[in-house]
Image: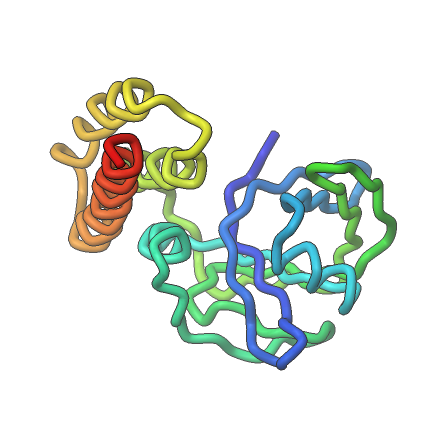
Length: 191
């Protein structure tokens, strides 16, 4: 099972890198598999740690994919780094081992501490739709325009029926990113 979360890691200059990511658990270890090259990959290699942030504010997922990465942070308890202030819970991790790969190395990290800050009340359909659209945005260069449009047509139903203000904002950011990508693609094809 893949869990969609936000990973925070420390950059070399001391700032925090925030990235949406799918993680898995295997034999008590958390597996994070960032693409090469990426800041998450470099930060885990250098610092031997990462933080999993479980959130229900889908604006953060959308924001990370649309250049909005300035979210309030607070210090972690046991490992080098910071976590999202909005995290319902967070899990601080230390690197156990690495399985190298040309595209996506697999980092196996062991939990050091897990803290719950607030109850998770569940996602509504619009929140789930935003997460699915965010995944589409992260793969725009890999998917056909038709596939993206087909998926968005279905996801829009959930947005129209169940979205609150945060979901509407997150959805709008993603739609702007898709529109911009499609416009750039069309311009490069006609150039």
